[in-house]
Length: 508
Picture 1 (cartoon, rainbow, N blue to C red):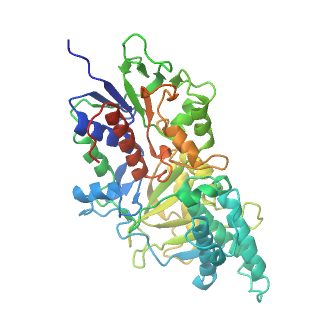
Picture 2 (picture 1 turned 45 degrees about the vertical axis):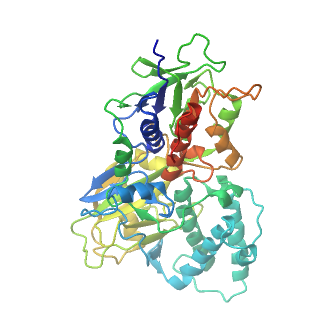
């Protein structure tokens, strides 16, 4: 009698899922059945390379955050993805020498902006333990990143009172302008973390977040090339697109009939049984799937899991790509524009600048002298952006640029942009957002809890846990969460967990 091979089903064909599939297939192709089920019509998940006006752009993951030790960089280098004949997003890195303009058409001198920028950087370096307490000039112990930053700003402004008062700039007082420049940096920091409000971002977790050393770069050949490489080793039929999982039925007490203990129920009414399922869906999908009235898991996950899912943060970050109107002169190029706005409680706000753009920090070419410019949105503004028409977005940006830079090239052009592409991660039911963060009230331990397989090992006897449901994805990695390399490591972790379970040789 030939014993059946164990069947492993991976839910999600993003970085975590395809890393796990790649590892399992290359290490144990003849020892198990393997399937990757993906609810969408493409592979890649929150990695999605596209093209806009002749340039290669990234709708999702964009940067390799440090090339030294990054598995993503290693794959990109080995597969010739670091060179391209086609222009690509941020191909010359992060643009320098920004133009900082305040509402009302006031270009701010670097001598005014730089001290606030240094203050913000020093405070963030202190939070992340890159700067000692004496250099930062402030003490720790705050509950949130936002509250600590505001405390630091207040202390700075108190010291500034002793200096000779500077003349007002238009409708701005010196103090209000300093606060607004600081708020601009807060908006940029929000895009790094996906937190709608930095006051919801846990202070203590920041010091444990790990970035690889070395240069931060984008991938010339497109981030999707890394995904394609991982998937290339899998036989035809392993990846099944358009297979959205509606319910995961599992057996906490273990199977007692010799059958496969997990059954996946798909949106088209079909089912698939499995011995092991690796769940790599986003934290956003887990939040919706474990909320009251939802039943992604049957029976529901244990309280330790649902508690971790509920406490951890998961935010929305969207990108808007705009093409400059052909009539817009290109002799000087569009600047790297840092945008400074009056606060929401100010009576001085220009009504022509829409609310959804006011917590956006910058608008800049995707590379030097490109006719495509880019802006990032986070939180409520990112969700609002998804509901607007193209004309509303183009009009809003055109009016804002005219207000901030009234003398910039061809200010008489009413519409400075003629085409756009925007992402919509917040309303996509396959993701419900962009990436995770450690929210106030949660901790890195919640990410460890989320990563634990089910059923949970009781420790009553020496038998290993049956590993019915395993969890991977960026939100399950406590030092590299929110990154593609965190997702990669988590997929590798769960594949190796299964290989060890079956006593397979693991080659890291």
